[in-house]
Length: 214
Image 1 (cartoon, rainbow, N blue to C red):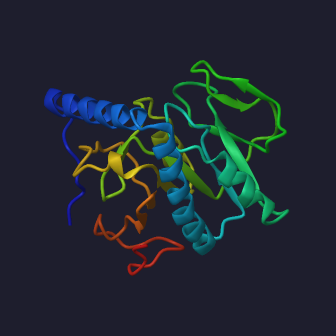
Image 2: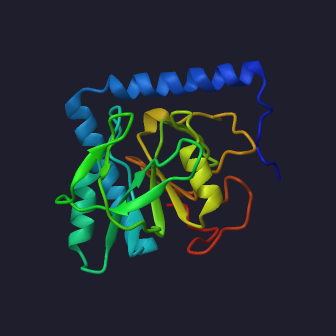
């Protein structure tokens, strides 16, 4: 069994920066029609996984820098039951975990310092499951975001199921994870969904079995 972590040398830092940049550039370069097609395929895979995991509440992210736009999928998921709740993350402080506020398409929104919309008000909630955007990612469930560490701090502070969502073009052999990096429990792309526990050679947690590989 190996933890897969790499020491943060200058070379590793450079590798992570390069991998992130390549993944972002490839995604941003996708033609709009291709991105829409891949997103629809990803939504189909997400339908099956979320039906299996069956959360009552989930958090997701407003699409940023050509990420899959899951707003329509979330609205359809919400319409499936009056008990369901969706939430968006809010950055209160750059060194603190994210907080989440309920979202529907009628909620008043405001932009954060990056220009990303989030609910302007509302009580803080803790979703059971988070849909976490992927720039680059590996089979063990480690990911590269934008370098702010928001999701790592959030996953370290809260017990929540983390589902990474992104396009296959971001898949790499390794993202050279650091000891503070928190892996995803599941990965979902247009090609399928996978439990990451077996790839990390660890026992599966609640809601997952060693045989659940998609």
